[in-house]
Length: 369
Ligand SMILES: *Cc1c(COP(=O)(O)O)cnc(C)c1O
Ligand SMILES: [Zn+2]
Image (cartoon, rainbow, N blue to C red; front, side, top):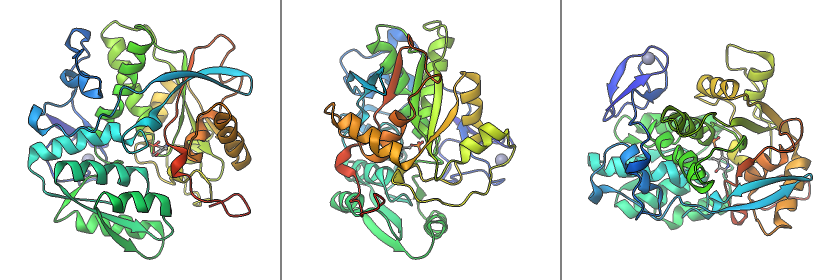
């Protein structure tokens, strides 16, 4: 299997230790196996039931903690009913496990013994857990100001934390330097992450009895869940199993909304926006690396990009908690984006609830972390 540079189309083997192209472009898979419903493994309740549709990995190298297969329950907000897909029930408390199980299984197959990463949140917690399971050494470069609840979780799994002083970019530079000798297991750059997140679409299709919803809303930073869902639904459509891909809506925090500017102002470059403060720490992303693919997916499906305020995020978090669903603020962002005319009254809407409220950072009196 190969990866292709999204900018210059150069091909590399999937086994490359390069994490992006020499030209700076991001990698995508050059081909993926078509969806075939007869190849679903009915005995597996994890996302490995779709193993035939995932990169080939020997069974003994699959590193699984029971990810995928999350339930769907009805919920509502602002008088609008929707179906909530409980991604926060994943083994490490966020949807990140979908991508991590595929990436770490692949790394085990490759014989990689040490990885580095520069997230300080759910991606790092997920990577640390799966590396612990796989016996792979995991080193996380942590930017100053990372959330203590998540750092505690990362450390508990036995990962090495390497604090990096200065702005967030310093941690990225440190990990890129370390990646010259180790493997950069990046949630952002590895195209294998999207192979895991695409199973969200397959599961929804199965759980709805063989149909797609009309619309979905995602809390969007780098957009790995939205883009994965897009690929998954696209494969279902190519297999003739659905007619239409749902409208995929990206919801961003007003304080950090690069996709919103690109979408509404039709920009052809990433805008240089300031790193605004937001309680939605998981989507505080100034430069989403797959922004071109994301904007294309959003436009093609009739989706949109909307922003929500800090108050709206907190109100959505509260509204869902009062229905028994405890979310971290980042996850509540998608619910806060629910409104007409984004969704029409009869639409079947699904919102993945991406992260557990148990990870919520403590609030200071302003309501900000
Ligand atoms: C990472 C994360 C997101 C955002 O995912 P992207 O792939 O960056 O768009 C949303 N919610 C939670 C809880 C997350 O951990
Ligand atoms: Zn390139």
